[in-house]
Image 1 (cartoon, helix red, strand yellow):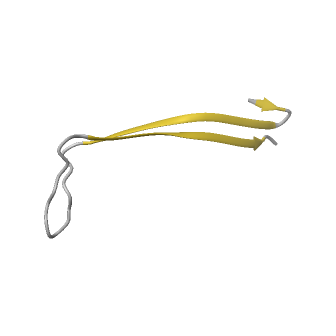
Image 2 (image 1 turned 180 degrees about the horizontal axis):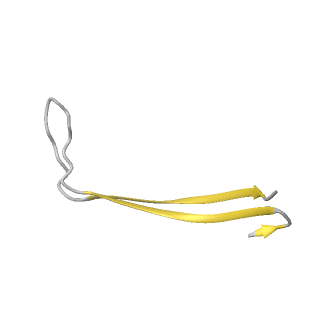
Image 3 (image 1 turned 90 degrees about the horizontal axis):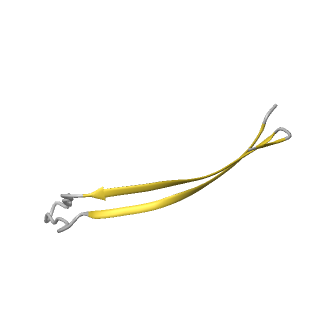
Length: 52
């Protein structure tokens, strides 16, 4: 969006990551997750600029 030389930005970015067959790298013992592990998040983005 633009107002007399000023520009504005508003947005949302979504993330989703799925971990499967995850094994630890600990040297004393090896353990693994029994089921897939999912991480989801969102990032709200604001921006302001000036055109010249």
